[in-house]
Image 1 (cartoon, one colour):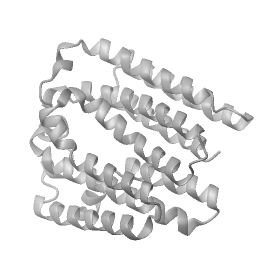
Image 2 (image 1 turned 90 degrees about the horizontal axis):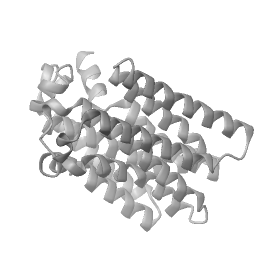
Image 3 (image 1 turned 180 degrees about the vertical axis):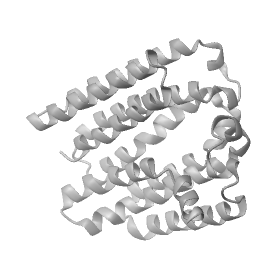
Image 4 (image 1 turned 90 degrees about the vertical axis):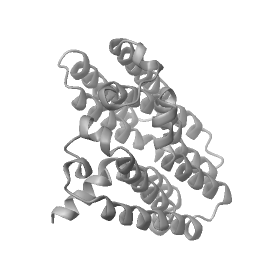
Length: 263
């Protein structure tokens, strides 16, 4: 039971499931085939898990400072077990991409996501200044996969820019939280408050881009809920100093944004 809980924690289920749903739901709605949806979404699930697992392996020492409660720094699971789990997920990511994805253009994007994701540790270590835009850019690729699968839906490009803005804001806030254990970069010379203000401005830009997708009363309701989520995140960040709650609400905003991928 303890091992299962540790492995589940390593996979970051809330984010991995979000990656999975970002492909599954749009494909299912457009094709009315759950099998097609699962076959296109499965590679992204395993790629997401690989990303988090290899990141935890690379960041054990940093996590002893920033996240001592995580399975590896806390000693809840051994690195040997984690490495085996990583290679299983990597094999599944490659296998499901090769045999599940029928579009060559989409397959290229899956392999690109995998390459960028498992190379994340080198960016953190040697190019920390670009870490936030790197993550944000990689996070837009699932939407670009949808553009490869459904090339006539040009509105998806606008959503991709919105995803970039949302993820950039969240990653900048996470960088502020994790500064004590992260490598020193140019951003360390910028005041935390200024970074946070820019991060929430980026979130606002994402909302502006999404607003152009409002076509129904339900879409308006979802959009207003996203606005409230960003506003609450701002309140918890600036006034209550509960930064983990704030970044959690930012993730809620991205989950709500899935609606605009299925309409």
